[in-house]
Image (cartoon, rainbow, N blue to C red; front, side, top):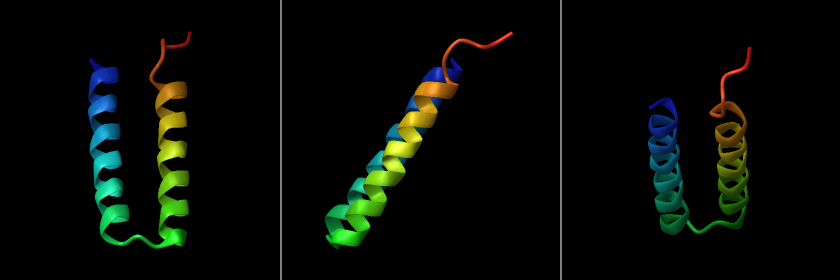
Length: 53
């Protein structure tokens, strides 16, 4: 259930950033948005797996 909620939150953030990039197509903004989504995706993959310990 936690993984599903994390996925929904990730998709909501990605959709928001995508709308921002589409409305303001600045190269700097595109780079920052891409890095942001990459870091969030990395965090999603590494922290929403099986619990440790």
